[in-house]
Image (cartoon, rainbow, N blue to C red; front, side, top):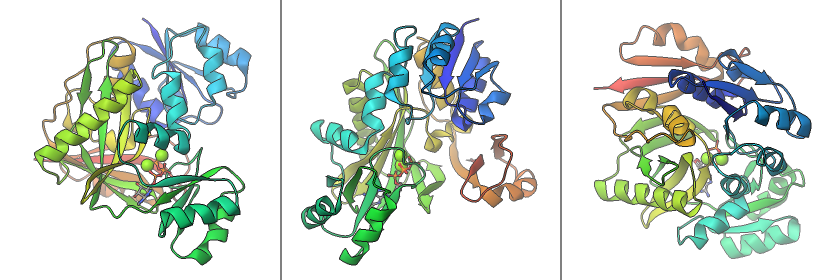
Length: 347
Ligand code: ATP
Ligand code: MG
Ligand code: MG
């Protein structure tokens, strides 16, 4: 059978490996650190993304390459690309791994984003605050996830401590969006250009980390269609192949794009128990050149992330009817760490 190479060995790589195995593929994980995906993948390379020899050897041992997180240096892709195809493509990765480039790309597409400005120093920050107003959020341009690398600025006096939290990394100031709710669309585009979207899920965050996703979201049919159209537009513009997560704010004036993730997405985990073809299989189908699953939903689902101490509730969750438990096999319980999730099917 063919081998799918996955850059990144976290829980997303793990669940991709399981889906790939179900379709008869083997997987090979490339991961610099400890990897929950290593338990289910057939092959693992433990090496840094700057190890060009290891990258080249990895590429030669697989048939197609994908990734499970967006912070891979594009130089690593430069080393892999001459050897094997990479899906999603380099541009999708480059756009989504830098919040400035991402916002510029989205607004060039005519999509609404939070007002934004690049901030490298104190001077930039005071100009950005003058232009955008407060409250606002300062975020590092790169490497942020689960709300890390972000500082809220409510009052002008918060500015200097917020900047200090960026640790001299290039940042972007975003105006605070007063949203009614947060939703996301998990969308897929196949090698032949077909697009399939799952129904938007409604997301609730706590301390910057996704807490729950509920489908259906409490939005009307028109907004559902608009959200799917928007996602399709992004995929087409990037000539994208694979699954993408598109995070949106629902506001009085319509949809505002928060960010895009060029990979399977935490807010798409509900599909494992709500759809015939879930987001992981959908991604494998797309990158392997299969037809896409249709994305339709046969159940209402609420996904709850199991973060840190939540793991201790497993024995009681295991007794709940209709609760499907997904654990990542990560050793250590640490506050703020995603250790698993539960999908509650609501019929
Ligand atoms: P992840 O990649 O894990 O989704 P992240 O670290 O990239 O998270 P964001 O998605 O930028 O973080 O922000 C996390 C959450 O913070 C958002 O889902 C939203 O609840 C809130 N948030 C972020 N930016 C804004 C904004 N401009 N206005 C209002 N709320 C915001
Ligand atoms: Mg993000
Ligand atoms: Mg986000």
